Length: 230
Image 1 (tube, helix red, strand yellow):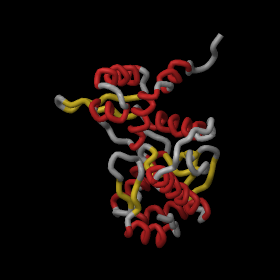
Image 2 (cartoon, helix red, strand yellow; image 1 turned 120 degrees about the vertical axis):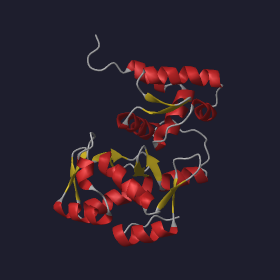
Image 3 (spheres, one colour; image 1 turned 30 degrees about the vertical axis):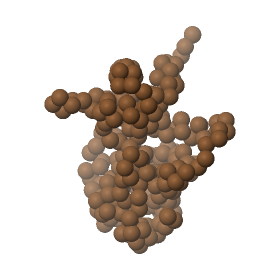
Image 4 (cartoon, one colour; image 1 turned 135 degrees about the horizontal axis):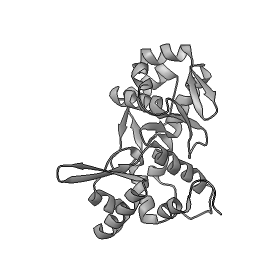
């Protein structure tokens, strides 16, 4: 007799390579059309439509309609956290011959994990904030200390607005490539948004990887004492 949530159905949805590619492509938080997702899935548009229907019915994807256009995105942060957790398990799996290329190194250096920063950059920011006592580790969450309130407010993060959002304020998300936590939740998203606003990071086409700009290297070093090698 089964007790607790029924996970087999969700597991089956994740177990198909094409559906896994679709979900992974949406981990950057963007919404994409069925045509775009057919390309990343590597299957026909008809097959992609069937996969999208199953993922939407399984509440892993959300459908948005704008006029004649239909866009798909991850159904929420909990789906992104599930995929990140699976990635941590997958890297411990059987060895496969897969040469490491530039895209892999770029992903490990800096990337988006749904709407927050991950990779060496994301972990380095979390390390700095905790080492300085701005963030306190409380289980799977971070708590913001008084010094953190002042520091992040000066950095340009609207903390009052963040606390009004209907999501966890600051979660500890274990990074799949670094095996240490980065900051997720509303605060993690705000940190990423601020770095984009300042021009410190820029998106890389067709990838979750982020490029740290020259201004970004200077700003991260000066403000957070964070240096991520190129």
